[in-house]
Image (cartoon, rainbow, N blue to C red; front, side, top):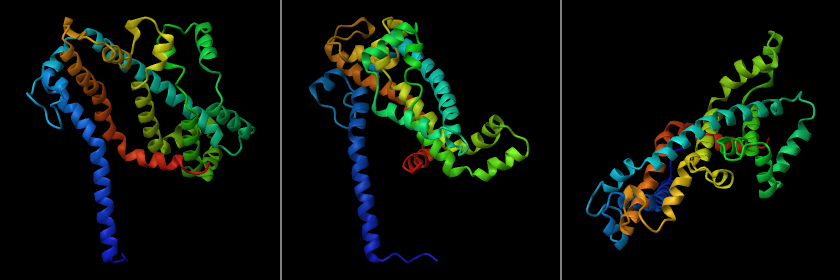
Length: 288
């Protein structure tokens, strides 16, 4: 039976909804301003006349972006790095998390301790740079993809999900039926990990899409730059480098256009993973 809501309950629910609405509006205002600036004239953007709606609506900025080959090269690089990096990341993290979720894995505590220590202790920037160079990864796409392909936090989240959502008895039954560990992982564990699988894909895509530091440190060839590094070159420039122009006002407007263009793919794919996101975050807060 459902408990009948009292007056105080209704008032509290209204207060919560209003509060959530205000917080959402607070986050939406800067986004709406960026979107409005991208569709406004360059002079109005620089003059600060643009609020939440475009002023003197124009598509000039987007037309210039479509003609800029350097931006699309960075866009294509980012798609490549995100695709390859996500596959490597998902495979490596799930293969690492599965044995750590098994109670019969000897040495599990030691491995967990070593993994957790890496979250707080690292070699630092210079040793990492030397390792990248000595491995022959410097100035290659692998210097962008490999250093960040595995996250200990994600491994812990996946391990916790497997421990709390997949029964030990189910795995034991599969072993009795003659399945080996790898068959159990492929046929039992992975199909039951679809929610956390989707969350990890989203984490990986967002991480690679927004990544810029690895390219900044380990890549000199500008043709290998991902989108974020290309955008950084635009944002720190005092003149409009797009389309061969030198208008400072146009350069200011193009900054907003590039922000919209770079963010659009993530905004498009997020709704497809949103239903899994809450469950994945909840799992991350459980005791493993």
